[in-house]
Length: 399
Image (cartoon, rainbow, N blue to C red; front, side):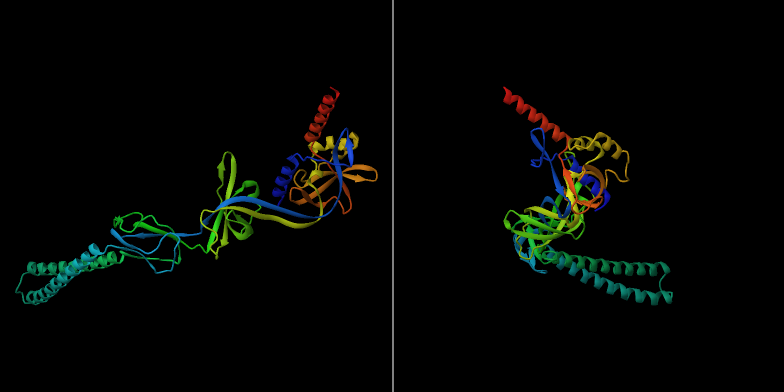
């Protein structure tokens, strides 16, 4: 875990008011600290998020043909193989257009044949000076026009064949129909110049693998890595755990009521088709699971701002506190914090270097040894609140 992550995590830890109910030492009439032994601890931290199931990729099936829908081959939820017929549109108009295009091509071929004969004859006559240059140019122009008309007729015929083919819509993929906005008998209009590429008939998706778009707080998103394993639960199968992997952390955050979150995409195998699109999910992303050879409770870490108050509570003299704080180690407040160590001569202040944290315990990299004991205390604010509460109780008892 990087220094920035450590810094932010520990700042959060130290800002949390820890409610203690301890039994070893007392100040006044309430317990306010414990002494904990330093040793190895298992650090575990899980980020929780929520999201919903969605298709990884969806294909829109559109028709470029216009006319009445005579047949629909699938309903929402049906599994379709690639190449299956999904819809058939009334073929009468495109079929007539094809017949007309074929007839126009036949006429164009005859005209081009006549123009070819005229051109050959014109060439001979022009060589023998039997016709003028102007008459020969007219013959050449007529031939070029006939040739262009045949090419145009061939294009029209090809387009007519495509239009007829468009009346039969086949599935381009293997998948499940997830949306169908049309019904059999409905008349659709699909202009050839339609920007959207035709009329939407169905939407299909491969549901053997789906994904969750989970929303993760910006504080936690930096701890998530690609291909990281994730555990998911859905309300429909509360006793079943699903596993997935992080495929993407979207780079743009979402700001809602001054709370910034980032979408994290998680891909999940769905061979049993138990996960349905739109299902709400609870996501658990394990960002820390390691054995720290040396760790202390988070409540034992103090900063320069509050060490004077809590150290005085356990008997550290003001002079010792002042001498200790006269030095300012590198990375203080980032990876260096103060702990109150229990020694044979009484409580003593010492600097420790810390590493990973699960917010309950913090890994110690330097400054303590196995078997050392440290004081675990609440914040200054909590201690003062407890004192005030105790005074109020005493005052009420005296009445």
